[in-house]
Image (cartoon, rainbow, N blue to C red; front, side, top):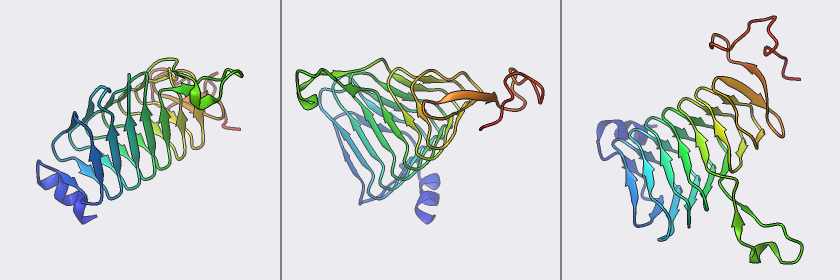
Length: 201
């Protein structure tokens, strides 16, 4: 991909002319690559949007940041095509070298569910910020909900819905996601006969 290569050569990076970035405090690091049809929309009453050095955001990704929200993406992270990242009520923090596969969704809020009012008329609610520590890898179509911390080096299997914290170097899968094993070679890996080394089925 020639445009991505150009981003590595020029400290100003590459923002495709078909991308749309709108907001008062969107800060891009060095050598950032923003692909075609990426939308980053920051409402004026939100916290900052900070995209670190050498971050790549691929086509058709939508990022929305509003009241109470903010977004930080650490250096060297990749957000692949068609992702949806929405930060309201609480921040979203994505560490360094994080891999977010295509069609993933991160939502730091939810709608109220009272039966006495239409959902659109209710205040947004949240269980807390979303934090993805360094070197996390989210598989295809993973959903991460509010109040979740995913520890350093953890891997989330494709199609999973993460509703609770995941420890570092864990592999979690399912709806809701649960830890099925630790990554081989990690300090908490117990080997082929260990209690944490479980099958995926």
